[in-house]
Length: 162
Image (cartoon, rainbow, N blue to C red; front, side, top):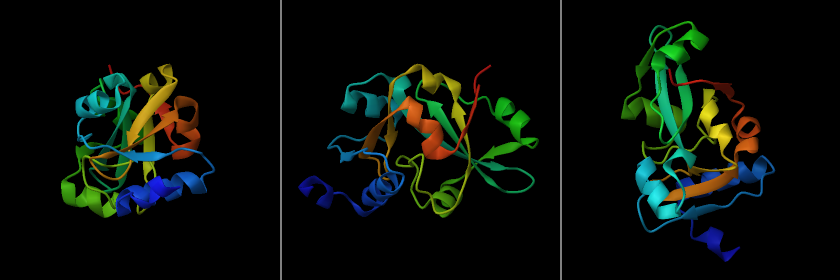
């Protein structure tokens, strides 16, 4: 348990949420940056495709936050997400992102946000048994089974590429 005491405040908050959800997942903080999917994969020793990118968008008309969990190698086709929403998306800025999630870009976890955020999961993530996600800071990550991702985030699995 000594390891957990050294977690930064943001990383500890993510660890707490994981524990509340009943998952024995452990947040680790790495010396190297995990800000980008490539940096995270290099630091962890996994493929970029196994990295979950947590991307915040905003609906154009209603200004609602939308979270897209994308495989590190995929680009989000916003039009595909829009078909599920029925309205246009715009990229959220850093201030809006921090406001709705409580985290800065580069460390946004798939869970533990300040408010409930409608979530879409890239179907390609489910091809991998083990995934890695940011845990609140650009240095903190945790690994999870892809089979836990839907339950953990309450997200809807969709195709984000095409």
